[in-house]
Image (cartoon, rainbow over all chains, first blue to last red; front, side, top):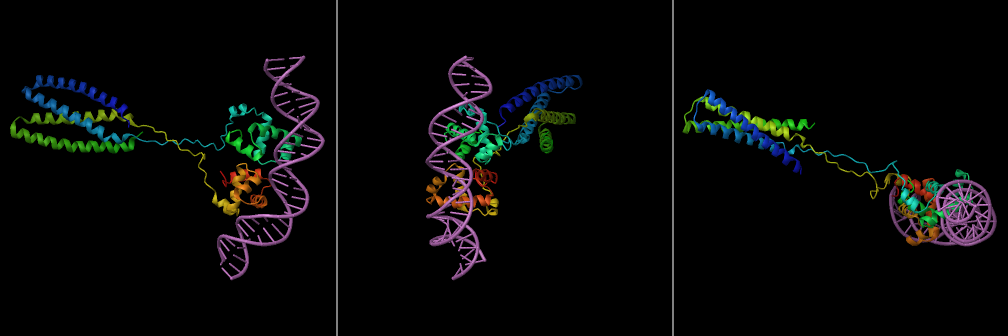
Length: 157
Length: 157
DNA sequence: TTTGCCTTCATACTTTAGTATGATTTTTAA
DNA sequence: TTAAAAATCATACTAAAGTATGAAGGCAAA
């Protein structure tokens, strides 16, 4: 986990650090030549100390900061309480008209044919005709089946 | 961000490293005393080089590994597709029996009274009686209303 | 403009759903 | 064990749902 990105970062730090180190060593060498005259063993000693300790520092820091990776759980609500979206594809596939859908909706709310007729200002027979068409298109026999099927197809909430 | 946890880690690494460094410096000193006799300037030099470079290494590593924080999106489905839990409180509050609930369930699946009767190996009249009780308890007049209400009360999926 | 679809309505009929009432048998809990 | 609740079934009836068929007006696309 978190490997590919860290690889680059790690390499970057190593490279950058190598360059930094080289420059500093040159500076040290220059300073030594200016103010002190010590044998070459000292330079090698100091250089290796610097290299080893910095490597150790980097390694330590990397190791200790490994559990830096933080998992943030982000809740994504996929429930649709109140978020109903009509399946228009199914609607057009089944050739269900707006009026028929309207009737279907009221039907699913538990209204009787007479109540639906009154609500839509049409006759009871009209609703019955709509129902018959609806049942045919949904391939069902009863209004309860129509409701079930329509809900499954997301034609109604 | 990611500050509070890293603070501890950073401090830990610094402290640990300090101890490590001290031990190593002592070892170096001991080695020097054994095999070489150089002036104290060298020791100070080497020590400061080690300290500075390791500090630099740690700082670099920490800085470069800072954007390690990773956001992991975890989807939590709060939708109830397949996750239906019966509301037993409402069930007992309304005094709905197991058999009645069973009938209600089949009703909501679009079955006719006759089909429910056949499925449960009872007579049509029995189902009608169950229905009447059910409608009374749910305070509805039709099966479609019963289904609506029952779904709202989480009595059925 | 004409064809097809939607919407509307009607009549007549069948089927299913729902109501009311009463009764018997199991279960269950006090 | 005994009373209450649950489950069963019946008869008779009313109400609603569903089927079949025909028809007419409106509207939009071909």
